[in-house]
Image (tube, rainbow over all chains, first blue to last red; front, top):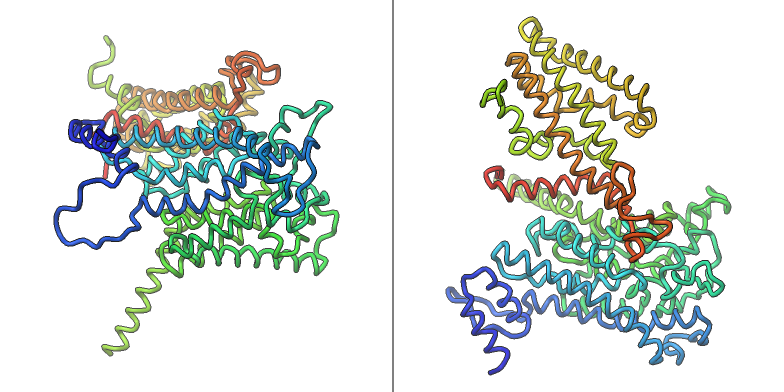
Length: 401
Length: 214
C-alpha cells in the first residue's frame, strides 16, 4: 500500500480525534487530497495557499544555494586559502569545498527553523482543533536566510519559538498576524543576543572562535564599515553579485532581483510594494546626499560615512532589497489597498535608510522599518478606504442634488 | 481563619487570582514594566505598594464620611503622597542603592492606578477593617505578578536571582554557560515585561475561561 493511502486510512481512523489535524496536514502537504468542496459551485484556481507558498519558496531557493557557496567562500577567503573570485562566475567561488562548508553550516539552520516552527504549528493546531496552516513554510525558509551563518542553533530555536508563538499564534495563526513572523524572529535575536547578530565577527564562519587569537579573521559587513567611517574594500559589482559577507541569503542582489521578477511575473508579490520601497529608499538617500552637498555636516560627524553614500548605492548595500522583495510583500502583514501599498512601501524604504544612517548601532534598519510599518498597515488601509468612501459619498451628493 | 470572616477572606483571595489588579483590571502596568528587571526591585516595590495601599485604604476609609465628594481626589492624593514620601525616605536611609534602582518609580507610586482605584472603588464605601483587607489583597496581587515577571526576567536576562548567580558565571563560562548558553538581553528590556505579563494573562484566561470577555 502506498504512503498516500496509508495516510488516508490513518486520517479516516483518527477522524474527529484530537490529533486528526496532524495527519490531515501531512496528507495535504505531500499529496492532493481526495476531498473536493461539497456544496455550491466553486471556481477552481491552481494558486491555493500551498501553491502560493511554494512559489515564494522557489523564488528563495537560488538565494539559499548562493548563500551556501558564499558561506564557504567567505570562510576560505578570510583564512587566505583561496584567491578572491573575480566576478560572479569566479572559479574559486563555485567550488565543492565552499559548498560543503556552506551546507554544513546552513542546512542545520534550515532544519532547526523548520523543525521547531512546524512542531509549534502542529501543537497549536491540535490544541485549537483546526487544520495545520501552510503559513510556516515561507517563514521557515526566510529565517535561515536572514541570520548570520555562525548563529548557535539553540538561539535560533528559541527565537523561532518566540517568533511563531508571539508573532503569530497569539493573534490566531496564519492570516491573522500583525507582525511578520520571520522578522519577529530576527528582532528577537537582535535584541536578545546582540553580540551574535552584529559586529564584525559573526558574518564569516569561524571568525568568532578565532577572535583574540593569532589567527583572528574579520568579516565586517559593508554597512558596518560605513557606520565606523572605515573605507570599504568591495566594489559595487561584488555587492551586486553578492560575494560579500552578510546574512546567509541576503547578499546577492542579482538573485534577489531574479526572485523578485519571478514573484511579480507569477503575480504573487506586489510590484507596488517592491517599487515604492525602492523609491522611498532612494528619496531618503537623495535627501542625505543633499545634506552632505549643502555642507551641513562635517566629515568628522559619525553620520558622514553613511550619509555620503551615493543614493543609488543604498540599494546594493545591506538587505533593503531582500526586505523589499521577500519581507515587505508578505500579503498578510502588508497593506491591502493599492494606494495603501504604495504608501506602506514608500515609508518602509524611507525609514530603513533613516535608521541605517542615524543609528550606527543598528546599521541594518530594514527589519525594524518593516516591523514598524506592519503595525501601521491596517491604519493606512483604514484611511485609504475612508478616503474612498468620502469621495464616493461626495459624488453621490452631486448626482442627487 | 478565625478573625477574618469568609466574606472578608474573599477580599484578600480574589485579587490574587481571578480579580488580579494587573492581569484582569490591567492597572499599574507602568511600574510593572519598568522595575521588574530585578527580583529585588520587584520585591521592594511590592512591599512599598503593600504599605501605601494597606495604610492608605484605612485612612481614606476612616475619613470617608467627612471628605466632601468634590475634592475627594485631592484628599486621596495627599494621603498617598504622604505615605509615598515616608517609603521614599526610608528607602533612601536604609537601602540607598536600591532606591537608586527604583529611582523615580517610588515617587510614581502616587500615580499608580491601583491605589487610586482601590480608594475610589472600595475605601470610600467600606469600613476600615474591610478596607485594610482589600488594600492588602490588591497589593499582594500586584506583588505576585511583579515577582513572577521579575523572576523570569532576572533568571533569563542576567542568570541571577536576587542578585545571586544561579546559572554559573557568564564571563568565566562555568555552570550552564559552559554549554554555550547566553543571557537573553531582550529580557532586560521593558517590552519583554509586557510580553511576559501578556503570557501570564494568556495562561490565566485559558485556565479560567469565564474571564474571557468579548
